[in-house]
Image 1 (cartoon, rainbow, N blue to C red):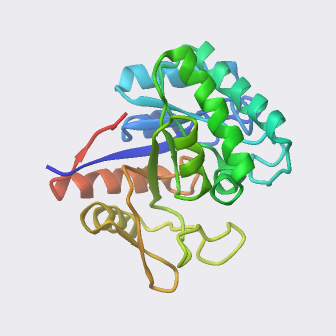
Image 2: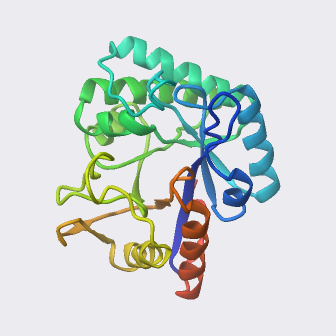
Length: 251
């Protein structure tokens, strides 16, 4: 039986106010990428996410970002690699201190895209993940889109795992459509669900111009803060199960 992970970015509270319906999303996903203070989240939200994950049987991943709470981590920053490594390490440690059994690391927002094309920043993130891996005694996978982060992870002794997005538009080169451009976000639960099944069965995703982009993904993401996120996630889960695809975390 085919299997796939279904993840959402959760625990993204801002000034104590959740940006997603975490209670509903934890009931649908198999993995949760939990914000750990860089772009959102705090000690209370991390502890809450850990408790919700344990109750729902959901695997926890860390979701570090640039230290950019004002911009929700969506503004690229030219940080010195040493400073970026320190910031990511601090975020990972904060989530671990909240009791999380961290099983993977997925950068957030602008950092997620930066590590695709900037080897220095990719190396800094991989080094921070390697630092935590050494403390845990096991290599943590890095989840993302293919790019410089693949080689950076390998050089740090870490596995890389591919991800695909269900509610984001793709460009023909495999990058995501910038959020400011038309076609950046998908909202139709049926369309998103059909994309999920196709990603598992055919390993491709249609770009905004119709180009079929190869996507070797072990995990599919629905953003928790997207409009209609819960409805989309539920439609995806139902479509996958109906097609005989098992939803399970691979970590």
